[in-house]
Length: 121
Image (tube, rainbow, N blue to C red; front, side, top):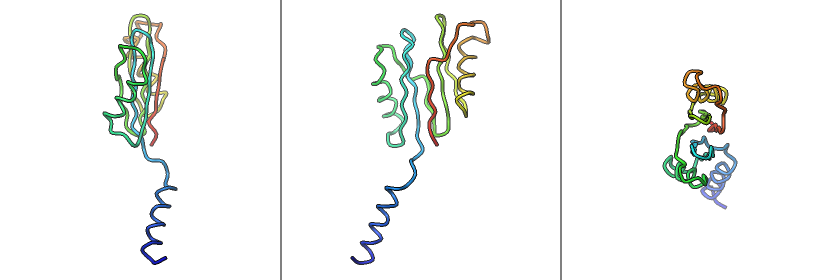
């Protein structure tokens, strides 16, 4: 093997052993069934990721309610009257924001988190 071939092999091996890429994430939600579908990928465009996330949701009224960049989290909370979406730097922050948005400032005490997703860095 010559030097160029060895360099090429070294580049391929370094790509194979590199750490995982950062990922985007998406959440889809169905208000009629409370179904939540999530997806994440470092390989698809954000639009492709949204389409794949919707494909995984079985309800007819699923829609994308949140997209996240690497390191962000999102959550969906719902009750029999409303639903809310929240984002944050941690899952706890996203859950709290979703609960606040669902409960309309505490007026609806029946909200609960029904889905969540963090996009890895």
